[in-house]
Image (cartoon, rainbow, N blue to C red):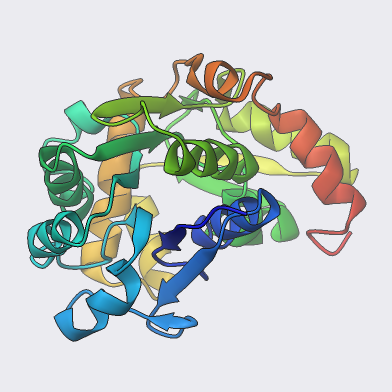
Length: 276
C-alpha cells in the first residue's frame, strides 16, 4: 500500500466517489473530503484545509460550485504543505466558453495550472448524465428535450474518468499537462437516445427546443437563473461543435479503449437503472 495519502475533494460526489473507489482498489490510502465527508472540507473555511492537505501526496480537485475566490489560496496552501500533484476535473471546449459557461471552473483551472503541479482533465459530458443528472427523467418519461438538433458529444463513462484520475494522481510525469477525456465515438444526442431505447426496449423521443424554451423547462425543474444561464450557455457551446471530437488520451493513458456508450447502456439497462 502506498505510504502517502491521496485526498479527494467532493469525495461523495458523482466523480469523486468513483475516483476514491479506484484509488482504494489500487491500494492507496484515500482521504474522502467534503462538507459531510470523513474529512470535513469547506472552501470558505481555511481552518478545514490542513486536515486534508497535511501529509497528502496529491489532491483531486473539483471546482467550487459558486465562488472560486478561495481557490488560489487553497492551491498556495497545498504547495506549502508539500502536495506534489493537483489533478483537476474540468470540461472540454474550455477555450470557447467566453463567459457563457463555467466561470468558477475557469478560475479554478487557472489557479491549478499556475501552481506548476497541476494536471487538468477536460472531460466530455458523462454517460451517467442519463442516470444521475437532468437527463435521467427523460429516459423514464420517454422525452428528452434539449436545445437544437444534431448536437454531438463524445460521451464518456465516469469509470474511465476515475481510472485516468487515479493514474495521474499516483504517478509522476503528468504535471503541467491537459488531457482531453472522451468516449471512443462522437454521438448526436438523438443517436444516444436511440441506443438507450434499444437497450431498454422503450420508445424514447428526442425533442429539439429553442434556447428560450429550454430555459423555461429548466425553471420548471426548480433551477435558479444562474444555473439556467450556465446550461443554456453550455448548449450554445456544444452547438458550435466544441465537444464532438474524439481524443486518444484515455486509451493512451489506460492502455485500453475508452468504454463505448452502447456497452454502458446495456449494463445500465441490465441492472434496472431506469426502473425497467
